[in-house]
Amino acid sequence: MERLDYVLNKIVSLDLAVQKRELYQLKNQKVVFTNGCFDILHPGHVTYLAKAASLGNKLIVGLNSDASVRSLNKADNRPINSESARALVVAALGFVDLVVIFNDSTPESLIHYLRPDVLSKGGDYDAHEMNPSVKSFIVGSDFVKSYGGIVQTIDLVEGYSTTSIIQKMK
Image (cartoon, rainbow, N blue to C red; front, side):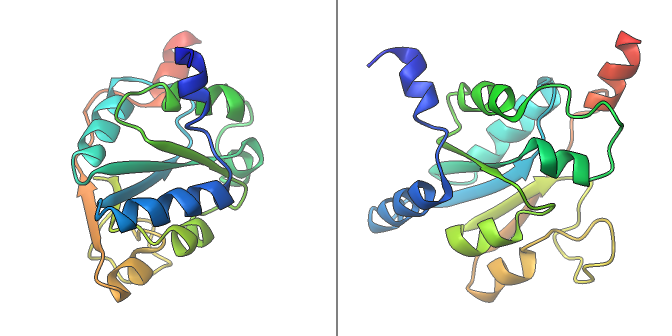
């Protein structure tokens, strides 16, 4: 198999992700799930994803679709890169096992389908926040905790953000 095919095969539909999740479960592999836009991949993203991957055996990344990014009220020009471009770059990371593009504004339904052992988000979120109306609440955390899963935050790398990169480019 060509290396590019290997990377492209990591970008999967929700149905295939659920099938692969079931296989991972049969093999007693701990599945970590995280999500994001990952618009302009930078060292903060790479560090975060690597640390998330180290929380288990398999890392599944939910990637916001272009429409989903726009629904988040980011800047008018976002996303900078298309969902297919962003998915390819994230899938190219060796520690990412699957990438699933989702259209909703949150990954809630994706989390319900995949039932990860660990739900991970950056340190700007709070694993203990229980109020969904608070910005630091981790979507899906209550569901993951309900079946004994773990919700884990990872410290952000200071000095890196897509917004700051865009501002520097201007």
